[in-house]
Length: 300
Image (cartoon, rainbow, N blue to C red; front, side, top):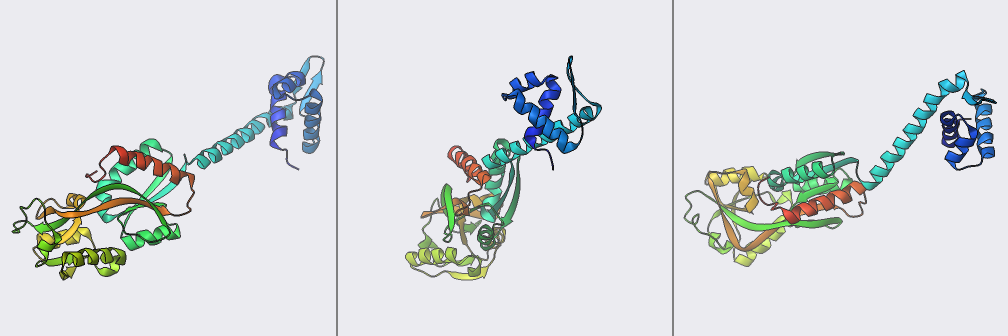
């Protein structure tokens, strides 16, 4: 048999008090119960731990060797309880964050900075992923939370962090580049560069609706999966595109961002429905507070 934590606690109390009477008072138990448990512990270990005489209670040589070991076990047990309690509150552990490429440049720095300040013992890992990988990763549990754009799919919960204009992205020197605002219809005669339809069908369905409402189908001359690639194609004069205004932080020269009248998009914090991880709850609160006090569409 192995001693339990209660017996070890009783043993340590008697050793430290050098008295069964004082140890029983400290433990708030009867002296008889304490004596019985120490006797049981000695029978279990097959050793004598204490000598008792008219001068009081003292450790035997074996008891003196056992004392630091008992203290270490109790300390380790207390630490285990602290770890479990803090993990249950979400104060320790790990979180895996995924960022869409169009949100990572301006969103990752303030989000990670806020989380490191508020939850310093949470280990954060970050990944830049395309939208399909991001959604699949949330569903499979590879990511705890993601920062992306709508529309998404069923089974995910989300919280809007920020809204911003959608802009027409034109090459420098384009005849419309000096406008303060454009309608989508004013770009009907342009060549367009867009992401592949396979990158995320819900996005392209929304694009189709807006182009249809503007009265035309875009002349798509090239498709490019990355935002940086789209911006490079626009700068090269291959065509125009449409992006959230915050994407302007990814390229400072060769392109001009002009807001599209009546068009906006949001940045969403997204997680799998039913995920009740305590650390996730704290993350959601920290980032929501950050979004309420900070322009998260600005470059981080």
